[in-house]
Image (cartoon, rainbow, N blue to C red; front, side, top):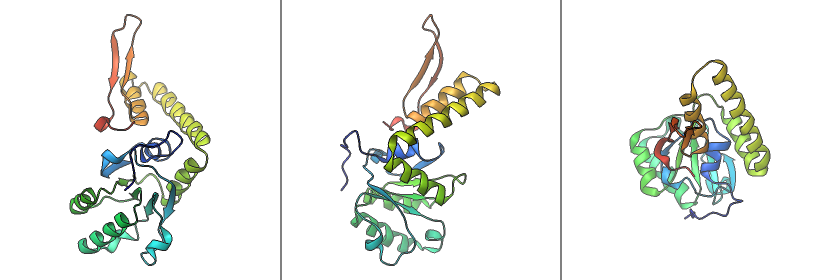
Length: 195
């Protein structure tokens, strides 16, 4: 199984969540595995020849057309096969039933759910860009954050909303104090598990 002790130059599910995917992307299963290493991203085109399409350490993107018609037993079979192949995780583009989440948890298989604001193609491109050139992807995400904070400032959404955004993006606790060290805003990321 993948290890949570990754060298600093490796990309993890946490990095992908913070630097490549929309901020409202969430773990549906195994959020404790956020530090699992990702070697590559694979867009699954069909269920045939799964072992030829996927390798250990891959993050597998499932377009909505593939899991759409799966029954619960078929889902369990597919999840077991993914676990056997030792993938890093699955990225889905639609919510899944709780029974599937429970099966993924049992298999220690992380599942991420992307929001409707991103297409499969955009997610694939963003994740591949991060895996190939982390510095450029980090710079791009920094520019996105700058634009979002500037817009929030123009719209006068307040310091708390801004710290919430930064906490969500970084996965860190964000504390803003004035010159007298009085707390003006405090934000804790959800589940406080992303490193």
